[in-house]
Image 1 (cartoon, helix red, strand yellow):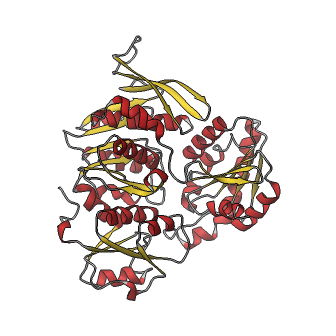
Image 2 (cartoon, rainbow, N blue to C red):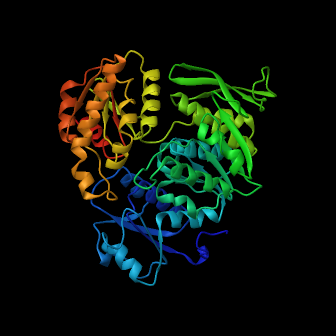
Image 3 (tube, rainbow, N blue to C red):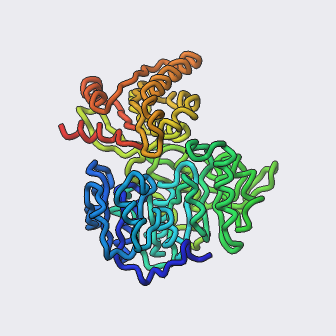
Length: 485
């Protein structure tokens, strides 16, 4: 199966996108505009961080939904699955018409499957790894197409348009979007149970990844993180493509070691050549020294994935080394927004317990001895409820934790959203219990709204403090408002 829906892309000129401000939709919109399609769309009047990407790309956005917005001359309509015919008049109008209509995942898959598609998948690290690989390949002259679920300053947007057949994209597992894609190569960063509102069990979640890698062709390749036990036990059984492993703590094809942090950078060495389990001694090759700007051991792991993929794509090692170090990251991943009266304000997208731990470990690495204040905006009632115990164990590196009301989702039931306040209070209570058990001295409090939290931080944040605004919702608005004065 070459195309997701067997569309003749040469006949598509005008594309209309409903819910265009979503991170995935914006990523796709900018890419399509760069490919020469006429792209426009609609969304709510609410301001998103994606507004700048769309504006910079010259994409017209209608704010507010109306069936009259849907153009009659569009060749293709793509809509976000946050909406459906029952909750959005434009989706209802589109589905009732004769124009070809696709969901976001189906639309992305049409273009992905028509290229040499390199999918970056996993519970965490997709965005950074996708952008990083795309940056190195682009700077090395391979001219890839790249689609990233966040703005990348070095791309001046969320995508790159290249002349080659390579298309690197982060593919989201939620709602099993995997089923639309036919990858030629894949990077699998980790499998860590998430999206319990869609995947009832951990096994259901893991099975989605297994089915995805089973689709890789025999001549394809899989870059797999062998530090993850779920990956280590399944990939060789379920993947017919060439498997290339990487790790920090396990036997693998690519291993990073001698990891050090100095002057705001990380330095490490890389060994290549799979050693036999239980043996000692030198590996086949030492690839030498590497350095990166991004903090945290999780980013050393992401860097290893990029190194392995680039070598497989025949990028010279000296270029990999140079451009790996030059990559400066993406928006909303430990992004310094600015300083407020001497306090550093940072925005980070972490919304899963594993991500929170990794982010705070990296923050402590960068800012040793500093007071770290975390403002956590839980994302979705279901995730918070199912992973409550894990969340309670995630904030140990912070000196102060503020928990906001849960950022709800259109996909959640009304009764769940009504119970969100109580669940936020439960999280505060559980963190307190965990701290007492472990002897951690940490101030933990519940503040209901963004406005109340902004007022609190204006009064309490002091020179030298590190304030991390954390979550997948709109917690970054606190920082934006504080920095306006």
